Amino acid sequence: MASELAQLQDDAEHWQPRHKTSLEVATRDFDYEEAVIRLRVGDRTFNIARRGLTQRSPVFREMFSLPQPASPNPPEVVLHDDRKFFAAYLWLIHADHLDVLAFNEAPADDNYLRRWYGIAYTAHKYQANSIATYAIGLALDYLQRVARDESFLVGAAASLLLAVITQWGADTSQGTRARQILRIVLYRRAHFDADWSPEDAHHMGTR
Image: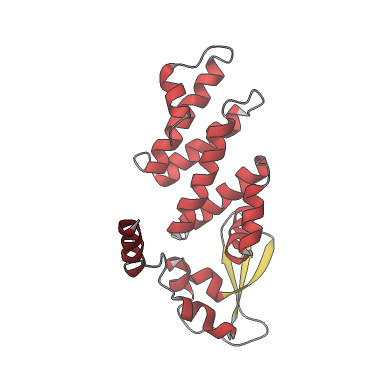
C-alpha cells in the first residue's frame, strides 16, 4: 500500500496537462472577457467563444492569434467542414461533463457512432489530438461490438473504417485497429452464415 501511495504521489508531481492552457488561464476566475467568433459551416453560422476553440487546437489558436475586435457583429469566418460533424465537435467542447457521461451511458446506436466519429474527424483535422484519440476510440469500440449483429450495415461500416484508415494512416494504432475490424466486417459479408475464423474471433476480443 505504501508503495502504491508513493507511486500516486510521484504521478501527481509529474502530471502534465494534455493541452497548453492552464486551468488558471482557462477559467480566469470565471470572469470572461472574450470576443465571440462567428463561424460559418455550410448553411449554419455558429457564434462561439474563442477560448473553447483554441484551448486544445493549435490550428484554431493560430487562426485566432490576433486580437479580435470587440464588436456586436464580429467578422464571419468560413470553414469548409461537414456541418453535422462540426456541430458534434462544438457539442463536446461546450457540453457539461455530466451530459457527455449521460450520452455515453445511454444505449449506443447509429447516432452514437455518427457523433463520436464526427467529433474525431473534426478534432483530427484541427489537431486537437487528445479529443481525436478519445473520440475515435469510442467509435471503433462501437463498431467492434456491433460487427456480430445480424442487422449490421456492412457497407456503411466498411466505408467509415476505410475513412479512418485514410485519415489516421494505415500504420497508426487507429488505422491498424480499423483494418482489423474491417477484415471482420468483410468476412461477415462474404460468409454470413459461416463460423468465425480463429483469427477473426481473436481480433473481436482485442483492441
